[in-house]
Image: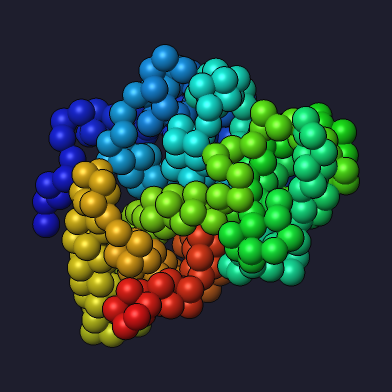
Length: 380
């Protein structure tokens, strides 16, 4: 089915992204996987190409468009090439909205130009060793000391944790109040007491630096409070729909790409004297996966369109996230099986897709949390 959500401008942007990936990412990706981190030069190259800060106003060096379809194109092309390590989506789609919607004019002047040029790489630090999806379990604290906050605690599983120059930290600024006693504080590289732990050894997305962060009496200026004091819960909930949609867009695009590669493989690979594609079981497998991808794509395109118009709600974003990521998990597993022993070899893209994609049903809110959100919207 021909997709109808993109204009000629979006497709021209897609060609720009493909050129960038072919020149600045794919030739270096194997080395980044070995290094466990991408090159900062890739971020600067993305900035020069205009791929950072798509929704940031032009006065700060951004693209000046709030049309999410451009972000969707970016997510689709990165998923198509299997290069999740360069986390432009995290920077643009997840952290960007906090800075553009919550930052003061002074904060915008201080941070957004570097955000758009690639000189400032960002992260958001929410998850703690003892608190994942449960914001009420956050123990990192920030005590008011007049002209600054004193921040203490630790975070884990922080994407961009090693490279980040600017980290939005979710901290407890009021002992009581549960999730409503939290605030967002911006911690910058070089602040005394801010330390990074190890670059965590994951089963997939090896080149995406994921770290532990530690805060030991870090003095955070009052000017680095982002948004309302004690207002982090509302701020986080406001931006989650876009985060989950962005993950879903990558998931369906990754599924389609690995299915296309597998389709080519079973046409060429022979068993029992004929191509695998001649076997009924293989044909049925491909038919099922193709149908599931097509149906999911139709729903995702509608979600993209709705979000571009500001009409996507939390429940449908959660539906998109859990369904598309679970589909991705299923597609990569079955496609690996169709590759046989070769699917278990890292030289075949399906092997990396299998391990890289496994996190998709976990970060951004687990499948179980997504179902809880949907259930509440229907039943409460």
